[in-house]
Image (tube, rainbow, N blue to C red; front, side, top):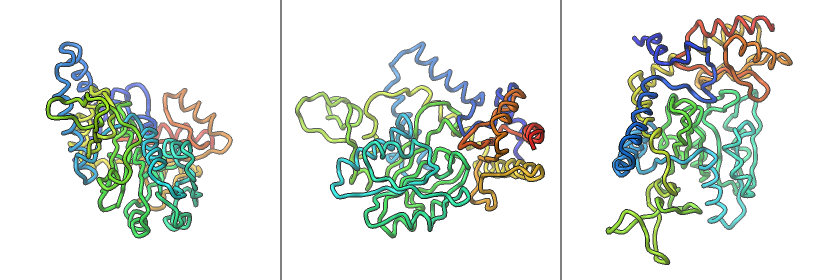
Length: 381
């Protein structure tokens, strides 16, 4: 039996405000904050002498994360953000594909998923939602013989719609279309199996549900993807070195990129908070991801029932649990912004996305939090 109130006590934010903004960024629990402090204290007292060991710890961490999405550690690295990952792929496609091609994506995508491709002049085609959902048949209808890839979020940021990645991936594999997934609003809470889902590349900015702040984006690529679409850029950490040194220092001499996902690491990066992310992963594993999902569904059920009793329009598609996530968006029409301001005055933090009110529920929330939200919303009905 999970003691959710004990877990709640790990999050000091709950003493200050009622926080329904994890889809923007999740707060830190105490164990992760302590881990971040330890990493920076090491830098404070001992400087750079642990860098090589820290890089090995980072590689082990990537292997640990890889298990969560059913792949090998060599297929995982971190880049600054999802925009970086998508831009890396867009530039690679532009460099290596000569014939005309298009990419199909979703109208509701967060711009990090799409702007990198648009900037490179890629022919982007956007599927329109059907009652905030993206039926697989609608996506497939947008593809043609020149479609290189489908880019979609696992969970849509504005509505919380959760796509059936396995079913979509199977259909795309039949058509030999690349499958690129933005898992920022689902990882690590909701299960992902890149092999079973036939995912070629995946990004996940872990400041949303990873409890570590802005530390970057987990970036998965399959070995076949890396071979076919090498990156357009290189840096001293992305290339292999000789036996004599860990740095390739020769000038005008041949070199090759790492075969692994380390080819996307151009140079040094902020290891300290990234290594502390391990504390977050261990923290969530100790709770159990199935327990977390059950709790999220329990809380969202409670919010949905409360909104229905108030006859509030729910924007998120909630009829099928397999399409639900931790995000519930709803609308009071022209009163949305005033309601958000009133909630803020009552120390209740929600977001405004696509003109609607977005509440994202997390493991530190409880039913009393939701009751407080509904009390304010009731005044606008």
